[in-house]
Length: 398
Image 1 (cartoon, one colour):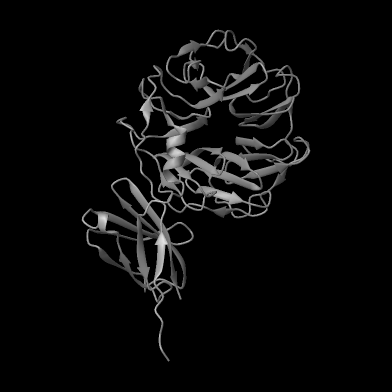
Image 2 (tube, rainbow, N blue to C red; image 1 turned 90 degrees about the horizontal axis):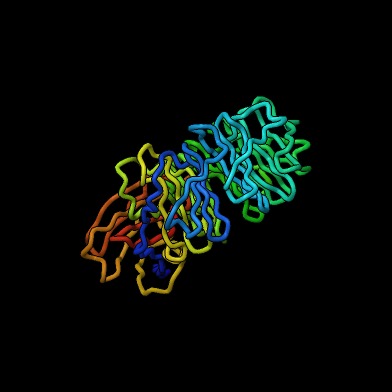
């Protein structure tokens, strides 16, 4: 019987990372949160709220009404009202676009505000003492912790029907009745603090401190890690634009264009001498903004064109392809590279489906070998990097 060797030609995504992050020259320290309303950008810092009405070109300090050295940890917008949650001073509200802030703490028994979220006429506050709800623009707060036991709440997300709350020790809760009752939904999550939550249709994403990103497709009934390519698993913030999800980590920003199945680092341009600990991400339709919680001025806020970032990792039709053969195999593969890149150094990474890096090597030759014969049968993800270009594909061991 003749044996037929199947050559599988794979065309890979290519990332031409031409755009890069640019400093927005925000002269403050400790940028903790960002929120965008049309072309107006609000940034909560250790010195109050900064406002830009020109997409981050110029800034004005808005701290009239805040106590001295107030640390603004969260922001939310509800109609004409802007809410600011602070670390130890509770909630403040401005009804005149940040011209003046009024404290709104009646009913709050915990004034360490970690997160705020708005749903219709309601605003929820996640605190070190659970969740509070106001139905009258912060005039009165009521605790809504039925089903939540001894959990600090660090993240909140809602689509208007489902309400998700993330806490310490891997705790996540779901309410479908406006916070009247919460149910624990943490199966599959590690014991890491859930610092961020975001919703995209039936997909719920959780960013954890040390465990990376987790995805649930059944309202939190089960969570699975989606960390392939995510080389830093300390995730402070998540943001979604269409099918693209951004993760702010202790080592900059990562982007997935396929709901977390594969992550790409988008950190070109950072020039700060400190670690790029991204505390918050926001978008205005044209730009993506990243706030860094750094102890030095001018390095707090960075931005880059959103269209260039997203276009850079989406699938394209460039004639940059290479051949893997045989595939499937017993674990031994040959990679035949395109002629145009064979003389440049190429970094090769192989991950298992848990996102664990199981092999890395470098090459500069047109025909390279990957040997995974010491690995169990299954599907593995291949990533190759070469001078700003990224090629991704799958390897199958039978």
